[in-house]
Image (tube, rainbow over all chains, first blue to last red; front, side, top):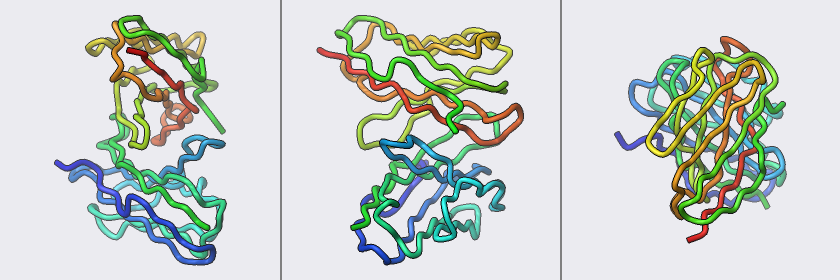
Length: 113
Length: 112
């Protein structure tokens, strides 16, 4: 398995633009998590899915953020409109059942100018 | 809010020495996990220890868990330059929760 695949690796966009981050979890994993990492706040959980259903989105900072998981092999995190304070590294992770470790993707480094 | 807090924030040692990192948490847990992150990369799962376990080994890694003190330690023996990375502990936020909450990590530098 190629692991958790995220795209793009880097994204630079202008304030106000829409940004879409993509994630392909490991086949057979039933949990998918979106995290954001910054120096100031560390790793923050934004939202997670179980069997494609959003379970907890309490970490989504604002209505500008939305996430979908239309099927077991694909998820998106969208920011519209983007702001400079959204600049961070966004990680997607998947796991099999709740008691196993997570497998993280390589992340998307987002810069909003 | 942070559940796990690592200590120290940064650690610098010589190759061959042992490295010990600590993690404290606030609420009851089902399990505690340790992850490594190399610069510019995603996190890699190292080891999981359940609340009813006290110690676990994996290669050069040794993890202990003291639920009475709500703390855990990660020991890396005979460190190598390749162990240079940030190390994070993660706990399920409350007993039975499916999501992990990560600390801010310990940045380990192993000098050759």
